[in-house]
Image (cartoon, rainbow, N blue to C red; front, top):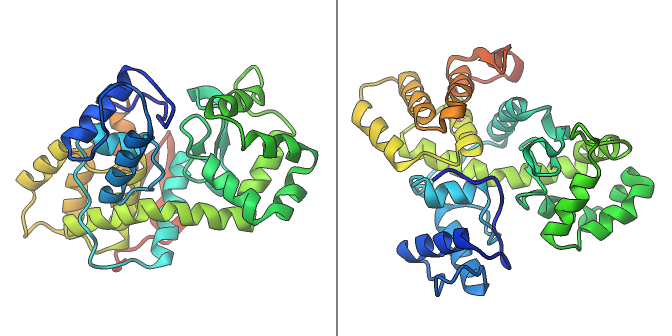
Length: 313
């Protein structure tokens, strides 16, 4: 079941919530009565599910949690190794390039999410951006005030509003072309590019890093190139679906080289993606595997630009 494009959280109601509750209960996470009301029990069940999958434990059904729940993404294997911070930073930079313009990447309401910000395009509509903004405002308040200037009071008030009100605010700072208008655009980009907010982004990206590590562990992948591939799978696809895992297991063998195994994984993940995005997924993944390629119409030499190697991660 494809992600519907909106996040679900405590207080929401409807038939989709019933489906979420039913799935959680089927998997052994007690969501209580399947009544279509996202209450305390459903939130706690969601948190426990997220904990079991190595995801951010926020009790919100966003894209990654939805994919893990409904797309039958294979549960991560608990990693028995770790990765270097430099490896994670390369993976973030590469996927960030695919997603937009790095740490300061900003987009408007073209996708109905109001405002997306940062290297992994956390957004207001799905509720994934607000935790980062709150942490910045709480822990680096003076820096936040100095960057946002006279926009700060509106920003600060927005953070205490309901999710629906926050989305309304985000849409209100878009122009008629659904592009963030000034002065918000310049100030939010500056906020995202600040040293403090970059560190927050990196910390939140570590959740995807742990998922990438579990993918590498499952398929016995050892290189930082493989980690970058797995990280991009985590961000764009939410993980490896169960049916994709079966295809990979059927075709892969112990005598297949790591690079060939990565190409197999890349193509399998692409082939099982939403038909609208199959070739986009494929071009991103194979560019990482091959070290270069054309993504979104532009050639990119990943190895040269990001120093990606086949060294151990």
